[in-house]
Image 1 (cartoon, helix red, strand yellow):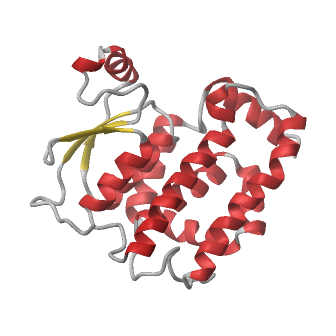
Image 2 (cartoon, rainbow, N blue to C red; image 1 turned 60 degrees about the horizontal axis):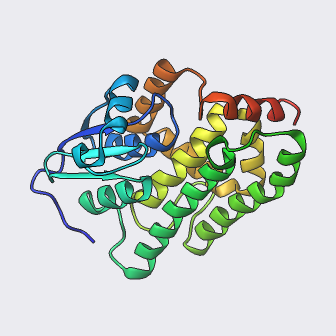
Length: 242
């Protein structure tokens, strides 16, 4: 899974809402590798979604949708996009076990996003729902921490699956927990308590120049917004009571 493109820094177009949510993982990988990416506005995203499947670059229901011009590939669904980029830019370990763990981590992150938004806002957060969810959120954090511990992650050094440089698993981790705790600061001490080494890893990666610039731009473009809409309003309301 170490196929190298002829041109490692290609042109990309990412269709996603102006939010630091699912599409932000894609932005982070592209920022990390130094790729240039075009970000169409919300009207263009809506227009692309409304096209008939036969007229879309890849038939898809909802963003993110990424067009990789150099590879002549269009993909939707966050895990599929991240696996493609991980392969394209050698961000997935060579050995099968850690490659499979990378797949697991990306899918776990996607699950956490579903859970923190109650499956995309199918319900709204209430105090009772949040109190029921709190132990599960802590368990998710502990799962990340134990994964890192088993592969040599330390408080001040190392990466989630070992290795000498951050890979797709690390970038996914940083954007999942780093962005969540930045935009929802009440959750920062929760992460630090349940996953102190992961908390430190996120801080180290977010301090790297590409991700620091990405977060600065995100703050300018999206303000304090996290997932948006009524579901974010209900989430902030319950966190205000924590």
